[in-house]
Length: 445
Image (cartoon, rainbow, N blue to C red; front, side, top):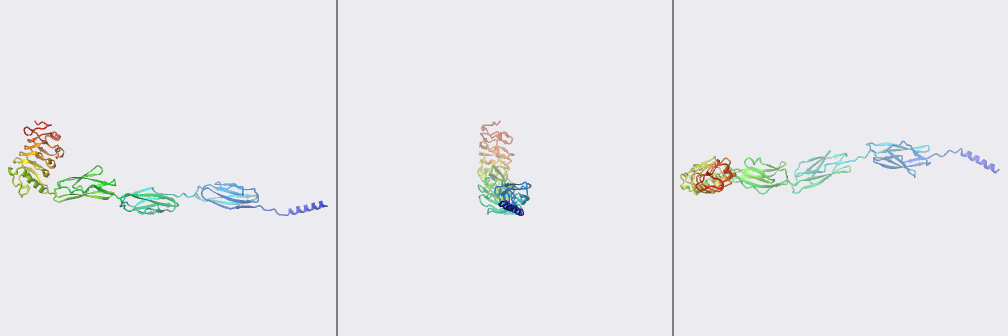
């Protein structure tokens, strides 16, 4: 009986269990949306399933990888996005007959912002505004810092730099910092010290007879231009080496001073003006004074003809003197065979204006005046048939005008004859001398 009861109860239970609905499965995925940056990145997804037999469909995007973990989580890794647009996809998870979708999106490739500008800018001490191109792919850029002595502004993709004059003796430098989206560019700006030209000394006022002066100059710039436009109408100059200037003045025949200037120019700016001045001509007064001395030293009281000499009459009325145009001075002196004796006094070079000097046939003595070389205008110089002694100055070769005709015959000269005399015997006449006088290196026939 007991067995029958137990069998009956079992049948009843089986009938009851067949009437109960089965328990539903579970699939929960969190989160259901993933957002990746443009670079490689990994995110986790938690999966809850009523059984361990869950998986995902194979149609997920190729640019991701999925790795299942033991704790019911999934690591999803997105490789870098090489595109400039957002890319999207999805992953479908499956648990028994349940499905859950996780949406995926990845940001575009991140922009590598840059800002570029030249590394260095060199400015002169005085400089016009400079415009520099700025290269950047950022939507905006700014000037972060600059030296106080610079004015810096921006316009579109250009940097405008303005520096005031540098009046100091030292270079100045500083950095301009630009920034765009966290990126920086540095521009080193240097400005040269103040440009200058200095000279070793001031020029003296030139004598009216002319002369030569040499000065040294120095500058902290290489491309200095020397402007002679005002200067060259009268004076001449020559640059010697790197830093010397030789200035020559001809004779001033005007009754007024001559004032000119030389300018040292650097990039259109005058750094220094040198004043070049020459005194007005006083040649007639100086020649009159010399001729008075000449008269006294050559026994003028006993000349054959000394008409108006030492008088207040114009020099043109003194016997043997012919004057040039106004301000020119003595043009010629012709006192040949006039019983002149004694030595020619110092200062003979004041007769620089003379074209013609004839003193032959007298009794002049002593050495030949060294100042003969000052006679730059002389064409004929006749000192023959006097009593001059000593040697012929070698300096006459290089300093006499090329067109001169010089006659030294019939004197008491000796010693060495300059080479130029030997080579130009028709131009320089020196043979014969008086009896008993001869030259060491030339035999007069």
